[in-house]
Image (tube, rainbow, N blue to C red; front, side):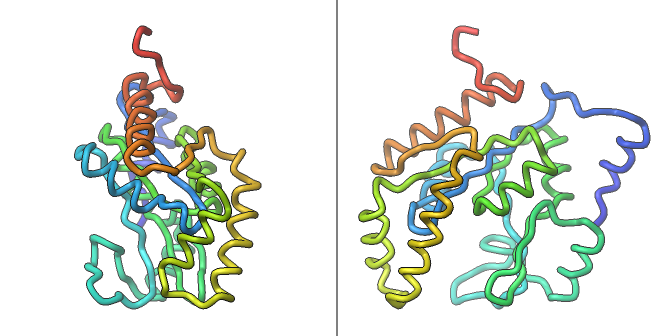
Amino acid sequence: MVDLQNRSDRKRGRRPDAASTGCLFIVSAPSGAGKSTLCNAVRLQLKDLAYSVSYTTRAPRRGEKNGVDYHFISRQDFREGIVNGSWAEWAEVHGNYYGSSAVWIGQTLRQGTDILMDIDLQGARQMVRRFPRAVTIFILPPSMDELARRLTGRGTESPETIALRLANAREEIAQRGFCRHELVNDDLNRTTRELIALIESYRKGRSGRPRPDNA
């Protein structure tokens, strides 16, 4: 998993043309803020927006499809990717590896296709180091009380796990200034429209910053 095109461009001293490369949109949020639901809603409307499917070493859960929900690979293959620098971002969570392919992301952007990613802040920081023009967006819950209600309403986690997720959420929210933009997900339909409008402003500009409609 070596990005040969990136290596070739560096040898020739070439830099990608910002006007011809795609935009990378990274959406981060604490657990329970609804970023996955939000991203899925955006993808239904922006069908030409590519979505980065993560790689993982964990076993598939019931109903999950390889290449759709995740790319499921062995620990050995993932570790080889770490050594080769094949991951744009990666982390080990609860004994399993998760990561995003730098090769696929780089190739897709060079083809002029825009990409949407749904990752945590730790992953977003790694991504920005590798793709500094990435557009980072943080999704906030309406309040911590509402976040606690959503996590409890899932009915799939223990009170101890929910308390840990809430503590992690407070830490992530405190670091949200890392992202260029933030949206409050208090109404899915409205927040979807806001996120689409933000994405479209960058797609019109192609300059690394939103361009107003009258520019």
